[in-house]
Image (cartoon, rainbow, N blue to C red; front, top):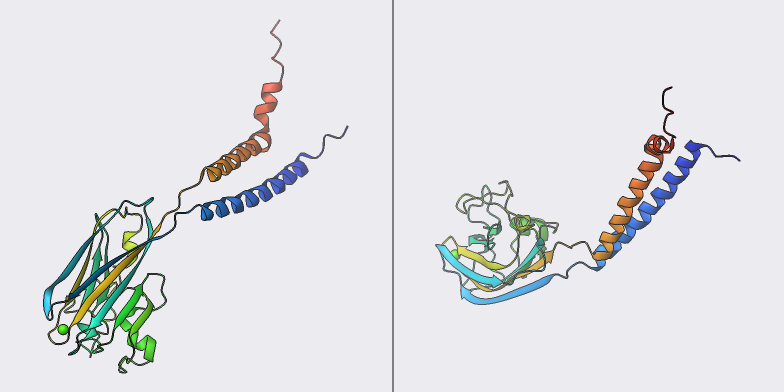
Length: 263
Ligand SMILES: [Ca+2]
């Protein structure tokens, strides 16, 4: 009887094992995605004027309940209305602080750059969604929307934007400053506790009202029971392959008869 070529058998088992790993890996991904926690949105009406030309600003503190898991990512919306007598977008500084840690600069004097020390003069309604995954920086929104930093906005500022993320003093912030304070700052943290949205108008003339803001919390998915079972099967299969082919000597040695005693 032909016992077969050990190398050929090993290759065959490796192919079968590899296919099984791919199939089980796909199942793992599907199950995990299907059983992830749905995002939650918390909306906070404010309806308060941001004091004009006052660095002390307006702080709005809100409590979030404990979430089902740590934060995967955060999306923030801001709604602001201009004063009937005028508003100045480049005056605004808005930041968000988490309950225990995490800090993000949402707006830092949009449009402020060398040669434009007051930022954008636009006084339009603002209803924006801020996400690190957006494609354009809100600091340069005029350039993105009009193609020219010198063309004012004549429609409300809306849509999806990256937060400003420049943790620079608003008196000095410039376009090229490092962007280190994005919303990724909150990843991995627990959402429960007090969140503080801070909004300031740092230059006299023109004023905005903070109408509302919201947090959309996306949670880190946890491995499901079925997913853990699949992982256990993968680990068991890997051990079997290792015993059978990578260390065959161990089984052979145990199967050998004991040496005869010396005479
Ligand atoms: Ca102002």
